[in-house]
Length: 245
Image (tube, rainbow, N blue to C red; front, side, top):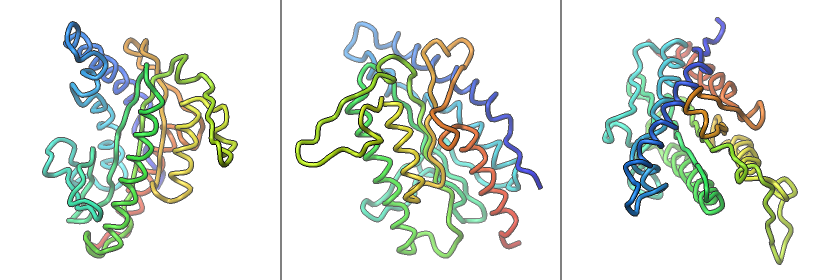
């Protein structure tokens, strides 16, 4: 049976408009206060528009009755190994087993440097913690779940400008030398998958003007939205084909 990718691009454009509209409203609320850009980051779940993509992919590829948790904090919590628990953005549960755990992130300017490092460390730590938790048996006997990481990054001059790094003792990997922050995110996503920390890691690009039309792009086919949709759909289809009745 062919995979159903659930009009993921059309749904993403709706999610993009939701993202930029939410940020615009939060910025207006923060005007005149100490909030500003920070208020818009913390003022709402601006990536909620992408939840429909996950739900449609799960429903259409063999798990119409799976539990898809996106809102309730207690139901989005998994045990950890290096910490007691971890709150995820999306959890898909089928008959008590974890089918998928997904993180939805975003980053906008003007500051990209520290935020990139924070996002990187968070992504690596989150995945390593969960895989260790699974190895130690906290989730019981079950197939390997889908781990997904998707980040939406503002497409602007600062995110596309080459960045120079200095390492006084040893050379920086050539892939990072002169790479923009968007380029770094592409390398990050590819290596997160290469090291099997995530089943699929993707970076989407979008300018602030996309508030109107929901425009978005990708840095490479392997880290784009279609790759994310196909990977999740394939995992769900495989799970539904072998899960016990």
